[in-house]
Length: 151
Image 1 (tube, rainbow, N blue to C red):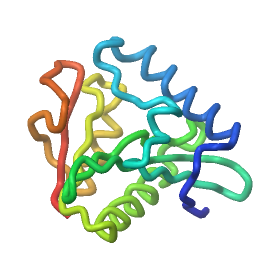
Image 2: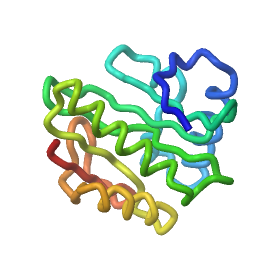
Image 3: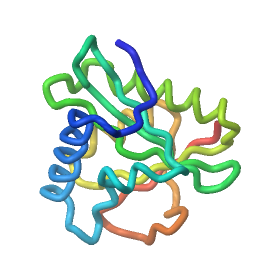
């Protein structure tokens, strides 16, 4: 497997991200959905990675620069047929390493509070993320869990 910076110009990643947004909309009330669509991920403050297994797209993730020392983890997704196969751990380790290399000292995230998101919350805890108050422009939301870790 390889992890590559993705310019989000390919149709495969567009479809992959559309599935992600649609899935989040089906689980989370619209006012609590914070997943970025393709245009939202194309902003200059975002670095986006795809995980490739040969020619197959199997995962993705991004970081959004909030300020000089703080970034937000965004759009972590593994293809449903490859969940719990180590792809998310591999990608999260890569993103943490890259965030440090970019000079960030803190990495935060928002994920869902519903049972569906429990595996994601456990993954983040495994990598040292702890629950925190809302950050950046987020507001308290019973459908959201906020987590952070120092780098």
